[in-house]
Length: 226
Image (cartoon, rainbow, N blue to C red; front, side, top):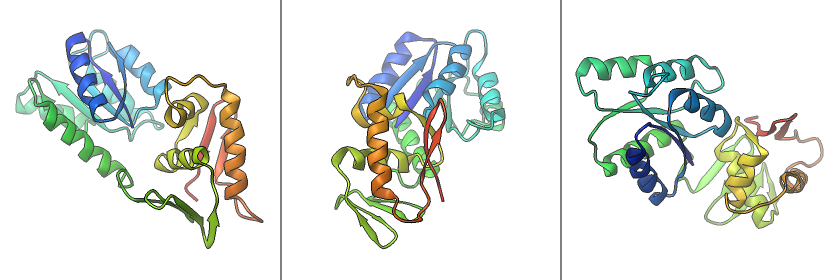
């Protein structure tokens, strides 16, 4: 899962990055509100850690703008701030934050809050089986079924399908698919994604079954919740 940190203190960014990467999260960061808003659009994170006091656009204003944006309005947001008064916490939650952490905080507690929030937003995280529509993916037995039919997938197609199903309904760019399935330090051409998606589609779709992978022109792909 990808977490975006919007924080202007480099030491705090590195502390958060260290703890998040130790837990297996992919981490990106921005240092002010405008950069943070752009990163939300480009990176499509699974959760946002947002500092209240930012140069330029404040964390509160950034949270307000995200909640007004239909595409990202459901993005989980945790506010991180030195403002610990009750009326400040209430204001942050009223503006749309899902949780509120006051500096200084326990990294272990923050990690627990992040995991809990991600589980509430996506109960499939950490599950042994993923189910979207009539497709079931067994992460323990490495088996895939669509309806009554067993699907035979190669390792890459299995990982690709899992990545899609954990983010069903979201439009994913080719770069996001490359990073999520092959890894950020692997350099492949975008058409590699297209080749494996063709293989996955061939395995998924038989007869008059609807195509579950929608191509979004000039953007990427979306696994539909049929």
